[in-house]
Length: 249
Image (tube, rainbow, N blue to C red; front, top):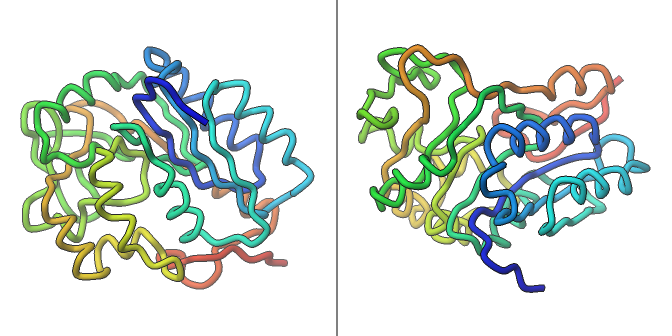
């Protein structure tokens, strides 16, 4: 199928949680993607975690918000395979990477984000902040300084802090350059910090930033943890390195 004039591919790894998915998509389309919604395509992998009878409901949610979409329902859950499949489908110049359980809290000017990244071709990612922004933006233990346009990851921290799974606007060149080096048996997010040498080389080609400015609150919040606890699902093994889900009593 041809997708004319697609500006943004939205890559989403998901499970059978239609209520969570609705909240996520609704928040991003309303607060970020409205000006460009006719130029967006949703690429979504749905793994069989949760109530699999919701397939039709998930599809109806996708069709409610998007004219263009590419959906895959899998038979075996695998976060690495889901992630790699989504990124392998990208054709647009820009990628909005969001997992299914992040809610966007504030109006976000995606066209301004794109303009800045067009002006700075070595800027690979602008992440949406999950903590309040002050004179610096704290990402775990690292403080990103303000550039006058966004908060920038320190040069010496690019391998450690450049990429994470939080909602981010990403240059498609970065996606195309990194996805061939990802291992589908390992947690993809961790590979961006300790992966194949060729992957590390691709990461070091770019700079990385975080959106927002002094005095603003967090832009996004995780809305999936409560569902996991209530419905008896958990990330198998180490949460930081997980690749599969498991049902718990």
